[in-house]
Structure formats: C-alpha cells, structure tokens
Image 1 (cartoon, rainbow, N blue to C red):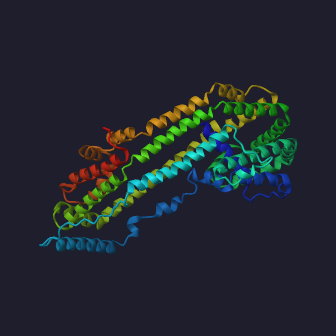
Image 2 (cartoon, rainbow, N blue to C red):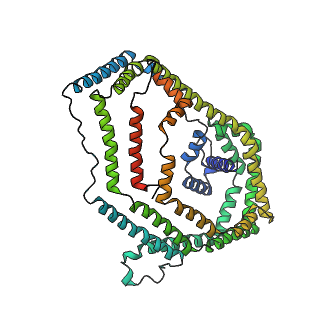
Image 3 (cartoon, rainbow, N blue to C red):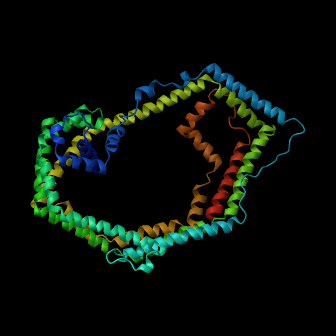
Length: 503
C-alpha cells in the first residue's frame, strides 16, 4: 500500500497546485512567487497527467451509459447480413465446383520468401558494423566513468577538435560540466531560494488551501469526491496551514540542511564504490552473448523454413478449393450457414459483449469502493506521518532517512550488478532458449483439444460459434494433422534462430 500512498500524495498535491481556473485566485495569483511555483509544477508533471490519473484510474472517463446502450445485434441489418452470408456461401461453393472439375489444375507454389544473394554475408557485415558503434560507445562511457573528462576550461588541443573518435566522451563531459554548473549555481542561491520558499508558505496559506478545496469539491473525479467526502474543509485547511508552518520551520532549520547533506554524501560515497571496470566487463559479456545469438542465426535457413510454412498453408487452400479436402469444405459451408448468417449467433455475441462490459464496470466500481477505506487506512495516515517526519527532521531526531543511510552502507552494489548481469548472460544462450522452446513451445495437440474442452473460455467460444451447427464432429477430419504439420514447420523456424536443444 506504500506505493498507493505516494501516488495519491503526488497526484493530489500537484492537482491542487495546478488548479482548474474555477476558483477566484486574483489575490493569490498576484504574487510572482506563486506563478513561479505553478510554472515549475506544470513543467515537472503536466496537468493532463494528473487529471488523467484521477479520472482514468477509477473509470471516470469511461462513457458507461453509451457503451451499455450499444447493441451489436440491433446495429446489424439482419436481411442484408443473411444476403451477404448466402452470397459468400454460394460464391465459395461455385469456386470449389469450378476448380474441382477435371482436369484439376495441378498445385503450383509461388515462392514469396526469397533470401537475397549472399544473405549470410550481408547479415554478418551488418552485425559487424553495428558492433563497432556499440563497443565504441561503451568504451567511451567507461573512460568517462573512470574520470576521463575533457574540460572546456583551457580548451581542447586544436589537433583533436575535429576527431570523431572523441565525440562521445566530449558530449558526456559537456553534460557533466553543465550539471555541475547548475548544482553550483543552485548552491550559491541556496539562501535566496529558502527565502522565496518561506515567502510562498507565508502568503495567504488559508485562502489558497480553501480555494483548492473548493476546486476539489466541484470536481466529478472519484478521487477528488472521495477526498472531499472523507476530509472536511475546516480539517483540510487547518492541516494545510499546519503543514505550511512546519515546512517553513523545516526550511529554516540548520539540521535539515545537515541531514540532506549527509544523505547526498552517503549516496555519492556509495556510487563511488562501484567498480566501473568490472561493471563494464560484465556488460560487455552480455553484449558478446547477445551478438553470438545474432551471428548464429541461419538467415538462409529461416527463409527456407518460412517457405515451408507458406507452402503448407497454400497447399491446404488448394486442397480445399479443388475438393480434395471435403471435410474443410463442409466446415466452411457450415460456418457461413449456421454462424455468420444466424441471428442467434449475433445475439450471443451481443450477450458476451455486455457480460464483459458488466465485468469491467464491476471492476472499477470495486476499485472506487475500496478507495474510501484506502483513504482512511493509508493515504490520510501517510499525510500525518509525513508531518511527524518533518518535525523529526527539524528537531534532529532519528528518522527513516538515517535508517536508509545505515542500510545503504551495507549494500554491495557491485554484487547486485554482477548477480543480475550474470543471470542475463546465462539466459542469452542458444542452448537455454532452444531448450526452453523445445520444452514449452510445442504442446501436444490432443492434450490441447482436451484442455480447450474443459476450459471455460474454450467452452464459451464453442457455445458461441457452433451452437446452431448439426450434431457431430465440428472440426474437419485432417485438421489436427494439418495443425501438427504447421506447428512443426513453425518450430523449425525457432530452431533456425536459436539452434536445436540437442546442440
């Protein structure tokens, strides 16, 4: 629930800071400091994002009435639908009758997937060229992380100014110096920024809080309505005033600056413990593993396997239209007659649509119902805890920041990076991926049918499509064999890319 507290706090506060123009803020907006704060908030998190969260997360933006009034069955012209179905049905049978007459046109396969000449050489060349840029950039980053910075002070040696080999480290150095300059300028204006912040907090806090509360009260968003219903205006204004006063004291306290400095210093010290060379070597091994996977792809074989899939599908269509697969012809006839042209089918589609819509609506309604308890049990206590935390910081008491600093000291970042990168290296292997495909990528067809029959979704689809069909086998004879051949052909493509599990 901690994430919910943070998000609720962030979006609620920024939404308040933005306002929506419905409250008279002439007295408030007259101050340059308020305009500056508002402009800063809008740059950090646009109002559209805040409004989008508060309205979309709880389904406020969804037009339920319009969606519920929509009917698929009523929107279709049943006479036109049956006419179209019969026309497609007759056209299909005419085509089958025409192409099944003797002499039957022999099967011809037009190859679509043609590999370019010397495709494997082309593949290796492209991989090699891409590797140059990847390795070069990683190496330049390693130089920078090890303190290799080209400083603007004093200028570059003229002979190296146009060297493209230095572009990456030169760009990183420029970004670093700009960041350092911004930090230094900010530190120089520290006292001024404190005064500005204090001026903002002292400027009609009661009026600003009341105005923002009125804006929330006018909002139709579930988040805002629940907040207004849970927190009275007087309580909100009083808490905001207390929070503003505490923030003012927090900003003016020397102990606040000390704890912030201690935190930043601790983070910086921990970052300096990272072994950049070891990290680079692990990352480079990941790159090598990924490149090995790419280089091992038999591109020409991939084209051949794609042709096998295309050939199988093309032959299935030829057998259907030439009458050599009568079960499939009967299957398609039944689909046009008993499914596409059936009013009951579209009524079942309509019922399924409204069933899923009701399910989605209940989901959002449950989320809305849970908001009130979350507001009382998590969000409001978080605000109160935040106020207590500010008091502890100002008074120099131990807080979770001290615990975080202590825990940070115990963390070995090199071990964490090595663990995750090693796992990635082990995963990026042809043996792992090919064996994973062999174990999980080829289910037994009969088992799949059995599972589909017992599955609620499978039963629903069967009920939806085949309910009005004649009794007997629904799937055409030979269909399971066709699917198994297609599955094998697709698995061959995976083998061409990842290799065989036996390799």
